Image 1 (cartoon, rainbow, N blue to C red):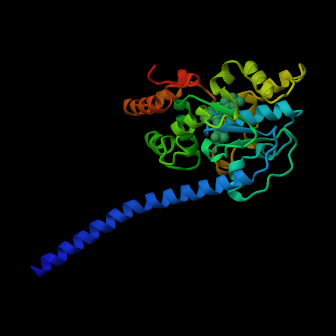
Image 2: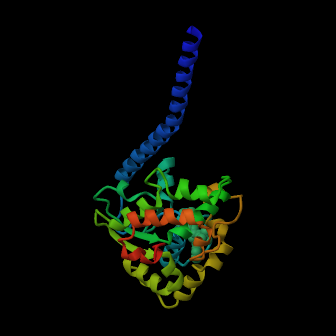
Length: 293
Ligand code: PPS
């Protein structure tokens, strides 16, 4: 009898221990995300903006680097003597995280950021260019990036863990919804990756106009050529983020639209449809991305 009670007690202890172990990583991840968010908000508050600063605000793998190159070509002679695009257009999130100072840059300054909308203060005074891309293509591009980072992951897991993300700052649906809702009424130009592909010139003039940049006729062929996929691929080393440098040169990967859906099985497609309908079906700009239509 006594022995039975001891066994029972130990079983209860074991169950409690297992439950705690399961909860702890969640708590730890939540704490980490919350501390990171606090730090970001603080750094954003401290950051002294200039009114002509441009923030290229994108969910990852949506055309951020392309926009960095477009703005570089629009605001300079466009030579490729720089070592890395981050020397011209810093990734502000990383600078904040690493406590790096933003070095002197000519105006207009243009920064890359993946920071979620609600982390910027209401009075943040800058221009934003928000690039959106079909979620299915983003998810596949993100999956390839994880593979390049050496993460051993299936597409299914990549979609369920990274694209749909417990951390809402990193969840594509939440991220996109907040930038499109624009509760604080920031000055935002929305650009679709697909429009850059089908009508590059039209999108380029929209971007230039938004940034008050004149395009000289003689510069146009150079800008178009240097922002092409082929040209950027040739200089890929100048665009690859640190983490996957020296691994596969697969960052300027294939630059195609509409192929993402081939990776989706029925179950993933249903999940995508469901989340899209809940969060994004009301946005006209994203109509062509609706997997239910
Ligand atoms: S990151 O890591 O979040 O900054 O990546 P990001 O730059 O946002 O997105 C990378 C994808 O953009 C494609 N890309 C281009 N497509 C067409 N034309 C040009 N010039 C171009 N430059 C970059 C790049 O190939 C990635 O998409 P995928 O689908 O993976 O090819």
